[in-house]
Length: 140
Image (cartoon, rainbow, N blue to C red; front, side):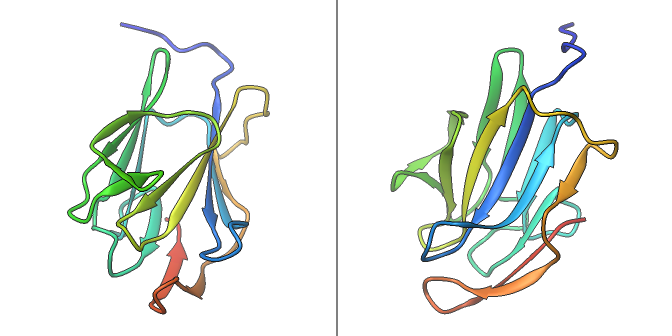
């Protein structure tokens, strides 16, 4: 069994504004081995959008980095290419469904760990997606 180093890499997820590509909400994780993203209330990152599946994406910590796994019926895209499974690269951007929200993934081993292991830079908010649908972001 692989044991992770005492200082674990921090992974940051930025929800990007649909037009300006600037972060509008941020989640940081430093101790999770799996991060779940989707519409259901029991995910680690909850995105209320009609094109996001209840369980859309999982990020799995591997010994040599993170792996992204699509679970969503509407797909997960990197550079407009649908993926099933992909190794996570620093600053990569994924899109949930062809018209859904975009998340930027930042890997950082130098950041200090937070006591809770998670923090959100913003409270839940409603925005309009590129196709005009309301999207509400939240976290559990």
